[in-house]
Image (tube, rainbow, N blue to C red; front, side):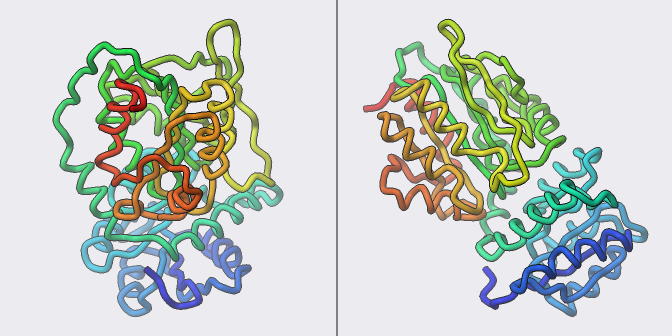
Length: 354
């Protein structure tokens, strides 16, 4: 964890335009200082050892040594938080880099001015600030859990449970945490699952497809009109917020487009509040790793209607911001390390609340 007042950043990118744009964006914050720039992996290795940055922004397409090779070296020799800089079309790179230890990513700056570039700047600054509270040791443990795999999850016994929908919110460190949870749910999990993971447009679809291939439950990116039903996991698309509306006896997805003013996208609060309004005491809210306080209002709403609430414990959360905020409300039923959350979901959904 960083203790200095200023966050020292090394910018690594083979594009001179991207290097200068990222540097300018970062230096708009007086608490961030760019201590160096590098145009390839070899240069980045030398500057990492010499300058000892608190954080590295890293492009993956570079001459001499690509981003993956540099990331493998970095995590072995000097584990340091890395925010990837990736184009919208390069989703496979993003997920591979997250598996290798990158903590988050932003979309690559474009030469278009306007709202798109402003959105990237806002996202970048928020994520860099969040690394002050980031724990690399916890990230490493979660990645070890992923690589170790797990035995098959036993089928659920038929029962009448008290939970119909599980709403899960996550930010930094979330993709790995979601994989650990979802791959441990059985194919006959008898509740619907809604997920809001802070992520830009273009990346949530591939995330859903990837998790679907690894999991026994059915997982897809949510679309307008999707039915919320047991055994199905719906991930809110980047750039939108997920809410629900009643149509006949079923709840359906209602997507709301985010605006540049929205602090968190997709919004965990919006999802949880809407789930609580429609499902009341049959709602479970789960807040995982992430910076900020998204999910705090949603958890309070779920608990006010008699639902069940879980927060990831400090022991495993890569960033303990979001879980700490909801724990501090005093309404969280269970505070659990990440590996224990899947079995808690299965137990409570199966048996209902004790």
